[in-house]
Length: 378
Image 1 (tube, rainbow, N blue to C red):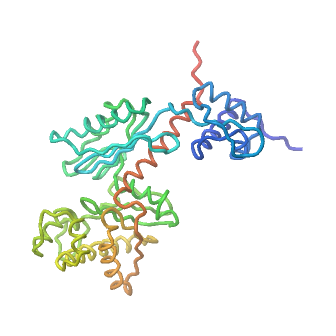
Image 2 (cartoon, one colour):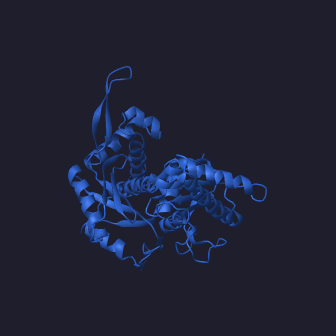
Image 3 (cartoon, rainbow, N blue to C red):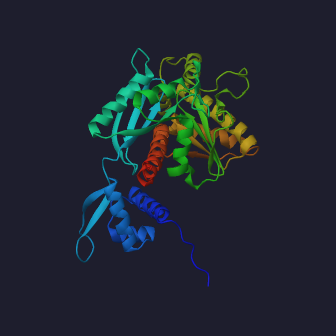
């Protein structure tokens, strides 16, 4: 008769400990019976692991379950002072900061425009520190979504040129913790993949419209960043009659189109969309042209990657632009069928993606630290 393989008790405790920590992070405070059901561990194993986690300061009592029959059972949850991760979305105007705990719950939030000094690092670090002081707990890591090309090493290439990772290094030094930098549209695509419209799709391209147009590409359920981080930079795809290298859609383009149509060149895209919804014919022509350009971008991407669908995100979720895209797509349907869906999170998708990635990274960091035995000293 074959015998089950035996392993070191420390390995079993680590595996069991991770299972319980993951269950508490996923579902919140639970009783021992609930943890047994969630993990498949015996009562003895659950009790032993909870004793170990309590000694490590990882869990704490979290009330009593009075809803089930029988004697009241105590609940245990992750210790509220384990610390937090910062999720940050940076655009050209402001920084939006959220602190999350290991369960993914938002514990603090602040949005503030950049100062005239343009000290992005100091501004972001100051917001995070203010949130941290209010919560009285450490920040273990930060995930920051930024516009522009982000290299695998965390460097940013934007309108000011490549920074060689200077932003990431400076922010990490200011915060005293690791910092991960991601392209903001890629984070938006991850939000759609894990918790939004893209969850049921094997592949999709998120077309996110903010200051410009960017794409987050998911192939076979995996975000595709490209070899050097350039994947998804669709704002400069050739499009007749635009010259090669000219932006297809951004704030300047909207201003140029508005000038040609006799509209306010300083008005935002959202203002033009609202004017179109109110019946302004010139604004409707502007929106129609933007819809045409977005569909042509989708057609170009579709001929290369053939995703299951395109998800409209950012300002493109406005009903007037969704309608304009659908109308143009119908015109091309016989030659190239394209399926368009609407983002679950709209303009907030990059921050939602940053929150999800930050919470996931925090769990990995905390649980590894908790379950790694201290090095033996001689």
